[in-house]
Length: 342
Image (cartoon, rainbow, N blue to C red):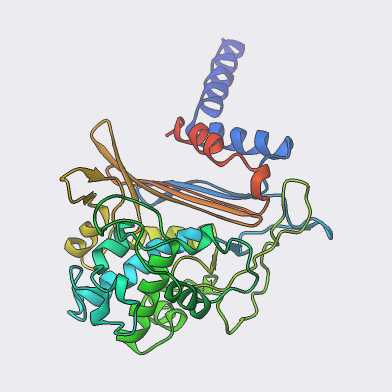
């Protein structure tokens, strides 16, 4: 009888350990790491409870310095939800309106852009050309240089509101609007309005002031050759962070510490184009419906860095992944494997 009881108990323990989402996610991360396809940080949570949180690999492949929970990664376009949030904070303070033309805030903006609205910048429906398509490898590129480049253009790519076309330039203009209204640098505004209230001590905007970032991951290409962070534009990128800081920020988006719930809902509304059709991008978030549940997400990638945040707003589930191995990391495949366990 004793042996039978122990056998049953061992089977129960085996089954419970084998089939939990936490263990399955752990196995996925470990498997990708072992085959050299995942070097980075992963955090998965539901309803405010962390299900899985790990770092695997190196922050510096040359010295073999291991990653740790405080290692900061460049998050590339994951900065866009931060920029959108800052704009929404200013709107809630009645310092701007989404449907006002950007020329109201930046009078010297090129004439062909003057009728573009803040909403259209947020939604990527402005028609403003994306600088990355023409200046993809300019080292230490700044917002000022991008604005100078924009001044050499003569027209929009299409009429504002006609269609969706991703534009990093648009989010640089949003950063300029934030600076104009707040009379602070983009970095200064984000620190005071977002990072500091949440104690995001490992999150920083890396701009032309070139602040020192201790304990940060160096970017690498698929051959493990250095492919580090190289531009200084803000609004569209230039934020370093950790999975834990991003989780704290993500959780705050459900509360009212940074923004009212009513205002926050605007971020998760799809854009309506001029012809009445829908674009699945809100204010800094990609948006889709799955089985009646709203999923919002954003990815980021530059040089040797890849980043992703995926959120199920109904279940309050979040997946955050940061890596410093560039194209060696199969982001979409990895995320799909994780999502199947949720």
